[in-house]
Amino acid sequence: MKTVTIGLGTCGISAGGEKVYKAFLDELKDRPNSFLLKETGCVGMCYREVLVEVFDAGGKAHVYGDVTPDKVGKIVEEDILSDRTIDDWLVSGDGREKGFYENQVRIVLRNCGKIDPGLIEEYINCGGYTAIQKVFKSVTPEKVIDEIIVSGLRGRGGGGFPTGTKWKFTRAATGTKKYVICNADEGDPGAFMDRSVLESDPHSVLEGMIIAAYAIGASDGYIYVRAEYPKAVARLRQAIVQARKKGYLGENILGSGFSFDIKIKEGAGAFVCGEETALIASIEGRRGMPRFRPPFPANSGLWGKPTNINNVETFANIPWIILNGGAAFAAYGTADSKGTKVFAMAGKVKRTGLVEVPMGITINSIIFDVCGGIVNDKKFKAVQMGGPSGGCIPASMCELPIDYQQINKTGAIMGSGGLIVMDETTCMVDVAKFFLGFTQAESCGKCTFCRIGTKRMLEILERITEGKGTMADLENLQELSEQVRSASLCGLGQTAPNPVLTTLKYFREEYVAHIQEKKCPAHVCAAILVYTINEKCTGCTVCAKACPTEAITGERKEIHLIDQDKCIKCGKCFTVCRFDAVLKN
Image (cartoon, rainbow, N blue to C red; front, side):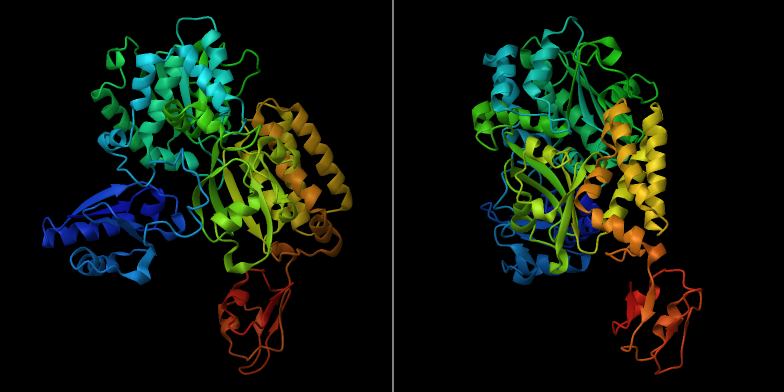
């Protein structure tokens, strides 16, 4: 009997996955026992959702992309019942679109899109929970920590602190009560790495947390996950219940004498709660605001007890490292940055989705070899790395290897793994304004420089994009950026100026054009755009009918005119014109 699996992560659901799943259920009602229907998580190929994978009795599979409910009947008739693949709909014969997977090394994503995340048995069948059996049987907590140190794994949440060293500090801290916290408060615009892992392979994160707890001597754990991730929260709750029933969580785990359990804390979506001391405050029921360090959480964290905090991706690496050895993980990457890194690819790239690549790969290789290049083959302009705390790296520097130190030298940061690709139609001043607007709104308000400084910076950027800026504004932006960065308490304020500083550094000419020429080179900033109609106009009147302010006049079959005093720069005329007669300058 053939098996059909459907990707029902958030990306698949948003593309219509639940409707496709229901259509297959309806086919099963008409043809009972004709095939087995299952769900899975995100395989990473979000740009081709809804994805449907068909396995024959021997386990050989092929994948259909862009599946809609109206295609389901044909897939059942042709493929499942008649053994004829529908080649025009295939992603590829073996489920791997050429180039997308060939350049990846999947450690964190090893089970994503392959197993049903709702069934612990499928995780176990893939070697899941073998790592904790190994450590309970023959590996001391100190040896576990040594293995993580050998691996060179650094925290994947943004800071990049060596994971094994953090565990070592927490184990050495004084106190009999200790905690492990998984930071799943993923809040960067364009980032969805943690969400996808939690939705697709939650048990890998639980197993990583159990191993961490064993290593540092913790008895309780928390997963701090934002409530905006309902699918991830549901999968986590289900996974925790299943793990308890199987004896992987709770008292005397697998007869080892070691006890550990996990609770979920749903966050309200405050970006600042991604900072570990603010996160701790939120779990304790207080307002999520950072505090001075030291003491660091390793010595005084949750309720004043020694606490280890890592993010989702970091924990998902742990079982693989324990089973394969730290040296195997360290074999990937560079001297300073070991292993692999998961990136959420968004923006003007052809293959948006989730990728996992070895450290040391170049940015260009990720964009062009893995993700197929720029949409509509436009000119590649820049990438934004590290989210609002990161910075913009120009295309001219994108032969740069993915390495913590190398990325930091550009003024950007690795961050948690959001990578937004921009092309020639992107205004870099507008990008800086967007990210600064985000961090300004998310500031907890504790620090004057973060609360007020980012507000003043945002006001300057707004003036510039409206054509009202002066050259002195650039000096003020630079000065304010340095002050906010040096005087803010936590990472949110300290890194908030990065998008501004990097765009000023690499794209200063765009700022100057906005100020001196009152023009946006990318034709994005509406306030300084001027729409005109050229001789290509056929007088079809479509643009005039679309204009909400009746700013366009002209007789039928004659060239039309735009009254600039009435034009509100909405761009509808540009959008509806079929003859390239409307220009924006």
